[in-house]
Length: 482
Ligand SMILES: [Ca+2]
Image (tube, rainbow, N blue to C red; front, side, top):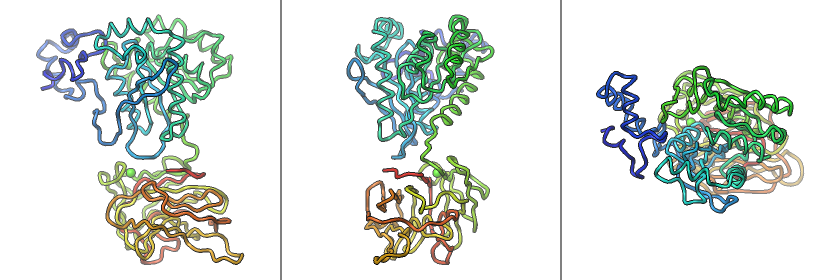
């Protein structure tokens, strides 16, 4: 099965992108595994998907993937793009391939980033000459003929494409490998809006260029990679002298290209460590600072709901059920409509300024709360007809009554709906499925220093508890357009 399908894939690409054909790959596997039969067995064990160099399947249902084009220095650039499904903005990552062009391995790396919550694109540096050809040696030869300065600008344009993309948070990182590691260093020098960069065994930029870097840097090296490592000491000295936020990690026992699982230089231990370090680095450096609390509700047991953005974890009361496979984005929590809710610590006070709150809900009935603040008001709830509304009202005083805002969107039909309330300081707005369904002007909102009740009203009155699934609750400290 695996052996038939791995001779080439449907685009006619070679089995491995390391200049090794499949026979040579099998020979090298045989050297370490005791014979060709054992090598085939090993390939089969790797599984069909893995044997094609995929950690994440091309059609993973959690992701949106495909090819995009953006405007570069030399014209239209083609790139593979992968992001989590859904409209929530993510930090951006530009991935720069090795000197063999945009091989399937780098598209897989993009999907790995997407699964971790990033909007990743892997541009094809060979776009100006018709794209990466089937032969890896031809790709390398073509790459060497490209105008290097124009190629740098093509990748800098990828940073700008992501930075200005409505599906990103505006924060962008860049990572790349070998030739792409050197390019990542060049992107860091030439893209002042780049926030973080992770070159893998990349040739250093000119020392005189290093002070232009604005990004935080994490540089991976293989301890056995003598050629590249020759430039490491001077590069570090220049980074230090320029006061740049940097880290250098030299991976023991690893050589050039140790991250690429399609090459014989692959070092699993080093690759896994480098991946964890890279993810942690990007997660910290590219954090969405607007997001002050984020309850993914992907837990499988226990009575704690993690806050992945802030420091206000929730506690489950009344015995809600975790539904690890039943959410809109991975797992969700199921509430019984009687007394189940999640209570959190204080996150923000609506009286102090603009904010936004979004959640996915499925189920519910008229008159139930979705998100309410203890001692304050329901931020999101359903009215007597099951229509989305907010009871966040302006402070008492003046001639007008402070009235709730009711939308026309009935959301208790048993389908998933993404609901949201946005306060921009002068207008209340309600969103259902990312469409504006209600809006009015207000002079302010009544505040509260209480925590949030997810699935329960502000006073936890009987009849206000939500019956159904709630998922992915996000609170932002500013107006966010869905
Ligand atoms: Ca979830």
